[in-house]
Image 1 (cartoon, rainbow, N blue to C red):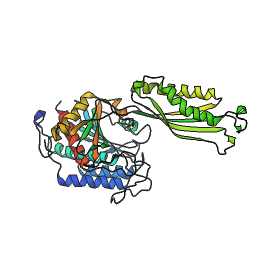
Image 2 (image 1 turned 90 degrees about the vertical axis):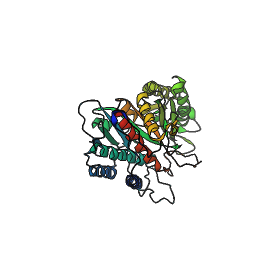
Image 3 (image 1 turned 180 degrees about the horizontal axis):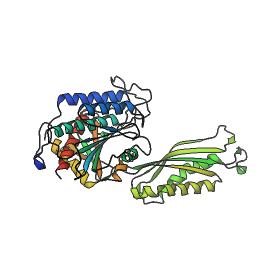
Image 4 (image 1 turned 180 degrees about the vertical axis):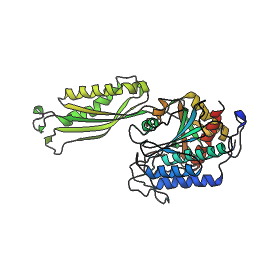
Length: 406
């Protein structure tokens, strides 16, 4: 089915046709302005104000979250019947420089960039909200829909718990979201039933002991060796204490100790992440990691202090809601526009919503057709084919209308 056509829906409703050129142009401009003015988690004041102003211009009544950034906005009034469908976007940026060249909309803020596509996610939910608001005004929106513009996705444990605390899921029965994927071509989405992402926690370890001269390590706690053994032995120990299929992995990103070649230091630090594909293994992970670190540190006569920071559980897509996204994309762009996607080891705080209500996240293709380079998220030169915005709006509006008839 072409994007200009319409399909009949239950209840005599119809899917909207192609986005008006004016709205498509506006959403691209909104995305570029947001891209030029990235804001970190819980600092998204300009972004929040821009979203709020546009929703109010459409006659809606958004409310800012209690944390001061991010918004909730209902389209239609809930009558106490069947719970609403929520559309979620994340609005924060990353603390990395924008490395794009010859780009008119590159970041104007030093060491800040939308290198994960949150500007695209936000434009998609905003656009879907504007389309659904117009349908509601015409009496063609069968059931209310909630828009969630969430701050601080990139900050562990994410902004989702604060949004939930502010009422994001009140009267909501299902939730859907998208995440940009540079491996998927623009115009397509990736779907997967069940686990889609990994759990992700942060781990910080401090080791201490009496140092001394490198000529007499037997009289000291050899902290460099102790730190090295923690770095190599702990991941192996943890991996052997759970089912290998759980994908529980400890990976270090920083190790630091000492200042001189002939002095055994008194302090060492390691920090990294704990990732896990299985939610039950994730729940066991803190105890397993603590025990493994203590064992290795004790063996080398080092005292350990462990700061295990809970991050996010895995995103586990509900099969019914995943099928809703599949049907919506098929209705708008045909079954050939959908591909299977693998479970990722990345973390995503959309998972916190799924602890309360069923939902699903789709991979939104942003790779330019014909681009053969292997690209990834969280890189300073990340960019998106802006046709993905149109695709995301169509997906969400179709899902909202199809969900209303089920």
